[in-house]
Image 1 (cartoon, each protein chain N blue to C red):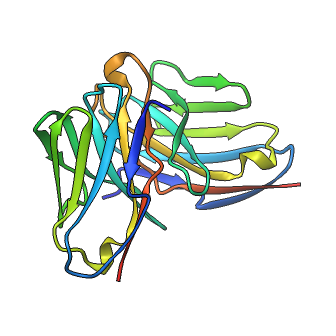
Image 2 (image 1 turned 90 degrees about the vertical axis):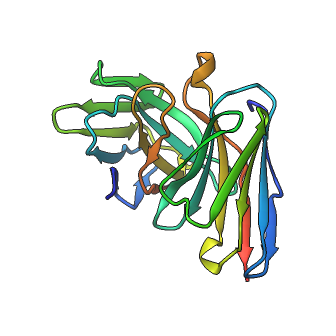
Image 3 (image 1 turned 60 degrees about the vertical axis):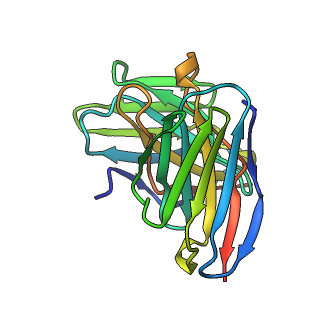
Length: 114
Length: 112
């Protein structure tokens, strides 16, 4: 499925600790995105990347940072996790840069901050 | 400010019936309108998409209707089946690879 994997799939962490989520793709797509999904809020954009070292903020970027040092990897870091960051995190790649349609999403990371 | 408003939040439809989910948008610069389907424990998957140069697009039992003047678009699922039970998201974006803005989702249950 367009070769996108997220890790870990599940994580429980304590308030105040840093957490890094990884998104890996194998098809050299330029555009990658991190969304969070919460009941009643749908999918909200955290950060996105339009190339190596090129990133921009989304709607809910406070408390998050990202890095993209290689085309295939897009990392999301919660600098100091809070309970409000308990959520399901999805990474997505855009297929449109290679003539495809829409996004392919990863399977998600369920993060619980206790 | 919610850029894409989706309704209803939940929907129960009898098997064989028509499921209708509606979305409205505010940004007239939007020109790409996809629908995504999500099953529990999975990521959303592209179902069907439309651009504003057409008013309707059909793929199998799924149809998008688009009304540019009203800034609204809807998903119709004909002959709904229990396997269609999922959460559906509408979305919109501007030209190119600007990020998709999603609606809040509709949980569809198709009962026999």
